[in-house]
Image: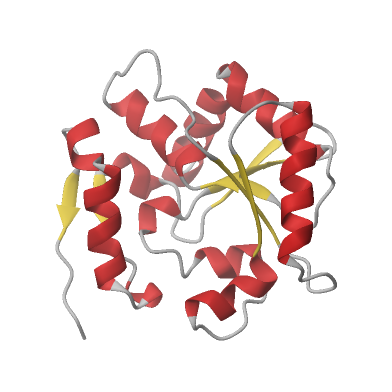
Length: 189
């Protein structure tokens, strides 16, 4: 087993053991959206909690479901999906079709969910998990999974928005909540 598999397998084990996260994956799978995953803090926070021995784990303050569907770009449809999910599981769902998010971010059009994640503000945030039809969990992580275990918060230069990065770090208070985390300094190129 290579190192990457070791980290990925550990994350999948932690997600599977977390009843709320596993149920959220089951509920999300019912929508049968193309290229979907539950990402960002859904995975990132769980890993950081385990690395900091936080019990219980940090509550899910939002569940980011991202998917990619070029055929239907309506933001209203995302709200419909959120309502459907909320009816099945009362949680703070946030649904975003990545096929249109490049417009908000002033990027070139994304080619897939994984491609869109390459532009997310923090490298450690760009990780998601999906449930296949056979209930097997699969991670999507354009920068790999090991970055979560490095206990860092790293600016993704591809996102091209260091101001947003600084605001997010301050607002989300990651360095206070997980005190072993280190902010990776970034430089403009």
